[in-house]
Length: 195
Image 1 (spheres, helix red, strand yellow):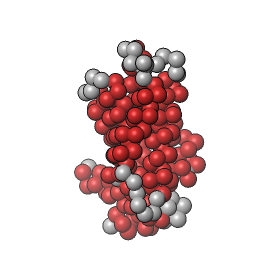
Image 2 (tube, helix red, strand yellow; image 1 turned 120 degrees about the horizontal axis):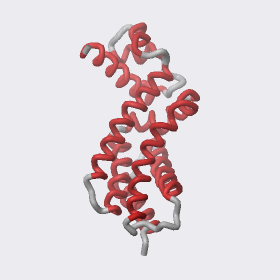
Image 3 (spheres, helix red, strand yellow; image 1 turned 180 degrees about the horizontal axis):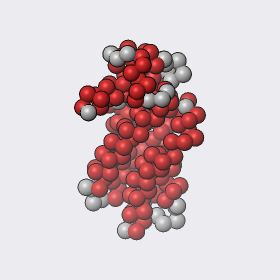
Image 4 (cartoon, one colour; image 1 turned 60 degrees about the vertical axis):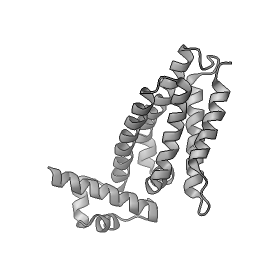
């Protein structure tokens, strides 16, 4: 079974590279196969089509990322620090994985199948990590109760998503995402903290 898993993994890694370079619609399965050093037909033993490859990348990488974010935030007792960790982990992921970030920020949104069928569940799971922190903060009197937690988590994600997309689209002079993470965390913490 390890050889089968290895091929599947190689296909997904190659797809990230090809999708980032060529774009989802311009990418060809044959290019992915070539980058994975396998025959074109082999891809179809693992995936039905390009959409399924793209969705698999999202599901697997998001599952790992969500697990990482949960682990980091759950080990921190301070609510404000948890929010900082959430923000920093998100933007650190973008900075450390530029090709994957490009696929997540730009290419996924071009797949109708992804938008209609898959975006909701993993995204909801990720947003719930932030939502759990916010609700915990409200229970402990650290975060204002007059703001709905769903609104806060979506506004926070929207900010992170926009900063990440802008960073991915910049050709030259990409700015420091670590500094941006601090500033975004400050904006949200100062805006939602109970005074």
